Image (tube, rainbow, N blue to C red; front, side, top):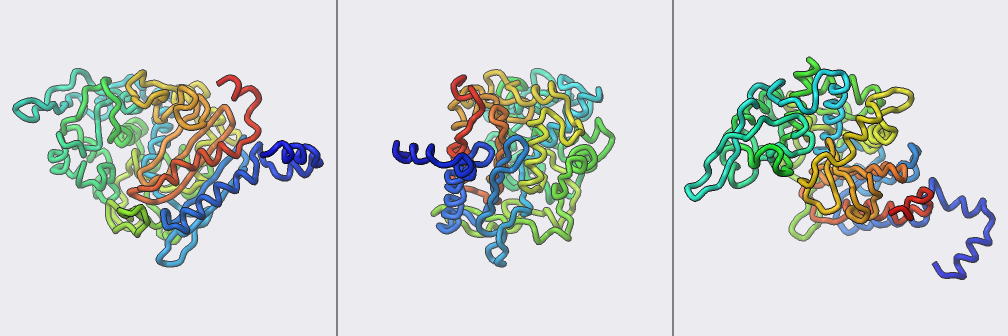
Length: 422
């Protein structure tokens, strides 16, 4: 803005200036986000998406762009239901910490306390003579799983891929994490996983994989109820998350967003049926409750869950977690094992340790994303919850990664002192 423009703005009545802001955001600048998303739809880089921003628990921005199902002519709407894949991990991690608070488990417990098959695990090593598994140097703990430092991948690594495929995991499970088509309980699958070699010794590396799916089985064993029932009765129903499920009620199938994929030119085409596309989230066995990647949700539902965490574990007078528990989850618990500079990993969340390491996100921001390109950030310093929902896999566009920048560039009234303290 020019000096003349700034002086003109100062000369305007306060009421008129306020009309162009909401919750500390410049509405003209926020409009850039809507224009950008619509441009991505018009250029066929994405089919459609929703975006929601809360500040201090109040919505300051929401938009729906493009198509929920382009081929059928169904437009994107704020209540569209998305496959959120690894955004499920935060919900399952909260379930684990709830059980910790009740004394039903400790995060230092060996996983074998609940799944005996994990008492003796193996690690695949590469040697001159080929692949030779060796015994794990210690048992895997619940904390190892929460921080993804157990050495457990999704089984697509060349060193183990063939063995995982033979057991119905890794390369034959979509992109490794997909279990919605399995006609067996998740604990059965996770017990079979324990017989396969992992790719690093416990506590030595940050390895992304089936960790939270194993935790889903731990929830079942520690609570005595199926994971979907625990999540429904302890988290989603009390929070009023009416559209969050492992498998969608058939009556809501018309709200499920179709999955698209980027082709070689980064344009969208409809993804195929099956594990690498539409999935079995309405029709299918409806048996495997995958704590690591199985949930469906809406931007409104998921933002409400995140707001509970931003409120240090309470929402509308109901307490879900203690403040210290939320702090434990949302601060770095992985030391230097999480190899992204200036970042850490807590008990289920990526954390910002240095300003500038994750764009304009404040120190203390926690976040994650999903395989279908959904993502979220919670910035406690600014009182922000940001949710971006899309179903596109694989994604060869930078649209999701630019979403947080387009939010922060519109924030013209940061908290007093927060910028200076950086």
